[in-house]
Image (tube, rainbow, N blue to C red; front, side):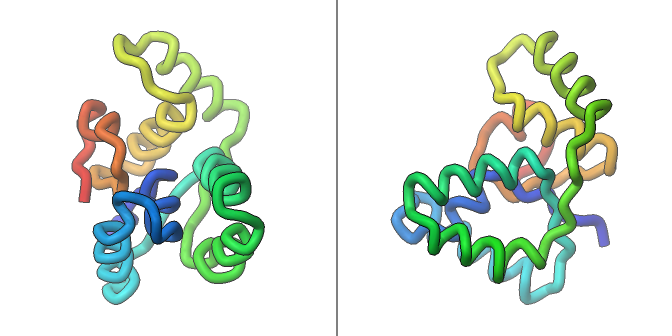
Length: 131
């Protein structure tokens, strides 16, 4: 079973009850966990999610991520080559996306993943299916 790529938008929505996407994120997340579906993200997305959790919600939310959620993921650690490839792609894109999303697209293509757990339309515009 191929992993599902999980974007920052889904990580945040899953953990934050006040996020507009929280109910849907909980539904999808619980289904993925119940079916033991492999989950994958990358270190830039983790960094982005932790920063959002820390500064918007507080350190306890970061602790929840680190102790209960992160162990469920395979994390692709972004190296210089991956960064360079994503930056090159970012600089040639016709639409504005973040560097984090550009890395996500590169990771998904490298792993031949087609589905993302995300609430970010940029994934669909890049040719990936959203859960």
